[in-house]
Amino acid sequence: MTKEFEFVDDLTSDVLFRAYGKTLEQVFENSAKALFSIICEIEQLEPTKSFWLEIEAESHEELLYEWLSRLLAESEIRGLFFSRFVVSIEGNKLKARVYGSKADPKIGKVQVKAITKYKFGLVKQNSLYVATVSCDI
Amino acid sequence: MKEKLQRINEYLWLVPKAVRKGMRVNAVILANEADMAMIEEEAINQLTNVAMLPGVVEPVMAMPDAHWGYGLPMGAVGVFDPEQGGIISSGMTGFDINCGINLIRTNLGAAMVKQKLRELVDEAFKAIPCGVGARSKLKLSIDELKEVLKQGMKWALSRGYGCAEDLEHTEEHGAMDGADPSRVSELALKRGRDQLGTLGSGNHFLEFQEVVEIFDKDTAKEWGLEKGKVCVMVHCGSRGLGHQIATDYLKIHEKAATRYNIQLPDKQLACAPINSPEGQDYFKAMKCAVNYSFTNRLIITHWIREVFERVFGKKWRELGMYTVYGLAHNICKKETHTIKGEKREVYVHRKGATRSFPGLPVLIAGSMGTSSWVMKGTEEAMQLTFGSTAHGAGRVLSRKAAIKKYWGGRVKQEMESAGRIVRAANMKVLAEEAPGAYKDVDAIIETVHQARVSLKVAKLVPLGVIKG
Image: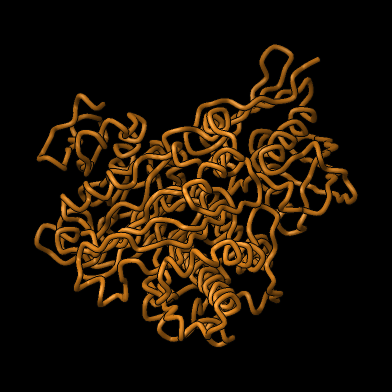
């Protein structure tokens, strides 16, 4: 089974992760899981709410950046932590169902201020998509 | 890169523009040898990147607490001249616009506060929403939020938060003129609406501190600081609103850089000419985040005063709870500086740097559990650092390494056995923010004091700590 994501000890102040997926959809879902495992105790979440999100960008890499940045914003606006993501991508358009539950500071870990462009990337290595994402904490 | 630096004197190091093709000006690092050993090569490379941008004013400056950041290192100053095609950069100001500090004094002695410290910390922890996911007790409409962005602390005052003296003792009097909410995205407004009056998380904190040493008696007296008395320090920023404004304008500035043929040595230095719509739109939006953050800290100050009133049974004015000063550590400002003998209006990006203007207060925070400092700005800073000094400690251990090395429960235990009371929304934050994960702030203070870019007034140590 492919590893979903891992954290890389690269940044002193912040957090960098790599997420993997056999498909584009999977790497987007796993990147989102990695992001919310920084923000909250993701394994303790039992999703009670969900909503649809649609995003378009100029490339898949830009789409990943927009997707993760938008999830940060939606989490704060809706007051939810997210733990499950079902993504479909057609061309450079993403449609996703995002599942989460009320953001409770007791299971909150640390706020991610933004997704940054430092080492940011989405590549296909052999048959695996690899996303590299650094988060400003 | 370090081997190419030229030592100017005990505290200044030159990064000559000859070290890298494309550098328009020199960079200068203010550091002693020990500080320099802690500054990463990558941070010095980042200074050289900034030195390549159009309209940059000599020198690009780094402070002794400099460490790698996005685009510009934290603990650095980048100045640009609009008349020379200078740029303004969302990346250079950073994601947490007007992350900064408020210091509130009290007339309560440490011995008296220690008797009620647990109650005080617990009450404050309840009163001030903190940690990731915490929402404000205020419910603002988008229209009202826009007033906050325009008016800053004046809005808070009109709603019964704080007093006129708070505004007098805040950088820009708590509101930058020219903030324009129409330059702020709907997403940013929505993010900011439920977060006004929240502390946030990460390195943000609220501390009850004791003034343990006075270095400049006259200034300390003038600012109401007395040895043995307790102060409250609030460290936080512009929350999701500022983060979103920075994210939005990074995208806009990335495109603008292409449009105006600006060669970016690093994508994170995305920028636009100061005299361009994209440049001025950012400046107007950034001011909104600055004003939001000043207001955020004032509302938190108001709630802290209420906590003291409940715990000590006296009105906050009787407890002498006046603002010593409030200021920004991440900001871009239009200021007049004398450059090569000529007065010029320039745009100063201070990222992890504190304004140090002659005679004005400078507040520098240590890491959790270590000392914080009140300093005084100097004329030397105007000559050397565009009126700037250090801002704090800066990390030496990554968050992952800190979690590996420390356990939150133990950090809390150790601090409590030293007589300090700690409350945190999540124990892991305590491990991440363990004092050992940061540089020694006292060493940084010694450097800026010896170099006279800011002078010691008072040293404060924490009695109680609240971490988001």
